[in-house]
Length: 277
Image (cartoon, rainbow, N blue to C red; front, side, top):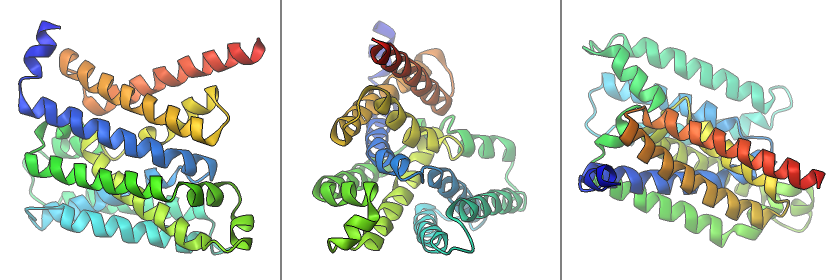
């Protein structure tokens, strides 16, 4: 505890905890509808797109790479949603095509950047080993503002997102513009993916979206309870993962994912024993 108290005196540790908790909260809220709509793999695809955009921004020597990464990822989310509705190209195939192409071209472009530590930069971006511990105050405020926007959208449109998640045909029949709300979910997913790159890296982002939702579903069957439980579990896992990584010197992203996996195993065991009883 003394060692932890000493670390908490440093601003970069406090910044990491604030950003980590907020991103985990937004990811868990987003993960429930994505998992129920069987579209959770979109997080993995968009994370690869964000990696490719980051590589281009690095080659162009942009001081603020978010000006390129954010719009490119949002446009890709819209294209995935639009193209995925085409019967000739299924949604999972579109995600696989875009993610693999973005990852390959991103790494290819990075090789032309004359970066002295190419392997280290790529590893950090893919697995988020140190990015979360190098945030400045401007990046923290941007994350806070974007997180507030995402959470506000989910609270205000909670019932509409619930309806679109469970039955699009019925929602369309009662007059809801399902295409608009699906597009909104895709755009929010893109925003959360870009923010989460600094936390767990582009390859591990899907874990923040999938694991809390699946863990909560082992314990509850109500949409509201699953959403609330996923939010609590995600925040606890992110906070614990960051603290453990700082104290043990392990990679932040991998540690957070490991804690989420452990939480899922515990929830699965509780749900299994409870169901048997």
